[in-house]
Amino acid sequence: MKIEKLLHPFFSESAILFPVLLLSGMGIIMVYSASSALALERFGNPRFYMQRQLLFFFFGFGAMFIMSIFPYRFFKILAYFLLVLAVALLCAVHVPSIGHKAGGAYRWIKMGNFTFQPSEFVKFALVVYLAYSLSKKQDMIKDFSVGFVPHGIVLIILAILVMTQPDFGTVMILGIITWTMMFIAGVKLRYLFMPFPLLIPFGYFFVYKVGYRMNRIFAFLHPWKDPMDTGYQITHSLKAFGSGGLFGKGIGLGIQKLHYLPEPHTDFILSVIGEELGLAGVIFTLLLYAVIIWKGAEIARDSENIFGSFLAAGITICLGIQVIINAGVALGVLPTKGLTLPFLSYGGTSLLVNMACMGILMNIGEANANR
Image: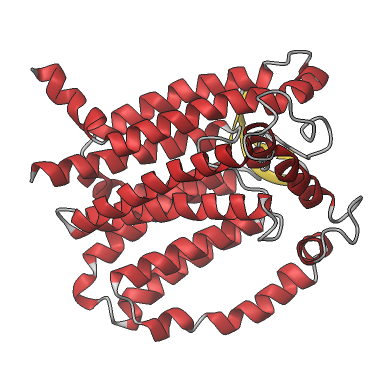
């Protein structure tokens, strides 16, 4: 009976558990399909990326299980500690003996043969902090100095640290998470819209004045005008979707992943799914995400307390934003941005953090059912 009671939170939220396991299983298969040629060329082992993804899946599965039985209320106590840890990790990427540079960016911390991406943890830490702070300040949430200012300051500190990597996309995600959670908490709309005029000079200095970011916008607007340079990524992504048809060419039979589509096992794995599993595979994948997001919204709505409601909402929002941006980029409806697709893309930190977050969501759902 004790074992059944222990396992109950994990298996009771099947609307989260099964979609996550299906997506993660698909991810392992598709990472192998998308990366085997690259892995063979780079490491002499076609299963290199798949084996690492499988390893992190087991770690993630363990983290999801632990978080499903770990009382989520304890995150109230950990909120500020997690936030300070997130800041420390963002600073650590610039320490020569710790930080790892790749592609001109300092976004990783190297630990032996593995690398850790702090920005994935930062999203989670921000959600926990906002859930705690906004729930604690509900009586004065409409006060500018209480409901808006402290959360805006935390966002600015994190955004500055992330921009030093640089990682403009993560800054946008952090901003959307903060804005949406403050909106849900009841912060006045006029306060939430106040910072929008500041986006003009921000966009000028960090988008217009940065050549490669402007090229991404031009490629988004006119991808076929320069398909061999600025439009290379998006045109090959669209070719992958277009050639997949209704049911795809079959797993492993895609062409665009063979040194045409850049980073097919990370940012553009949905394109590989589109080519090899077709429209049916893409719709099935997005439906699995929709089930998780729907269930997350339901858990947030029915939570036994405000902190649980905000925490569930924040986790669901974070997942939804990443899915929308990654799918939008792959389908050509958003400018190109390097961002993983949760549970599917290759990336140990992303998989570990996202599966742990799903465990927390399960725990909140179980608490709702037992009240």
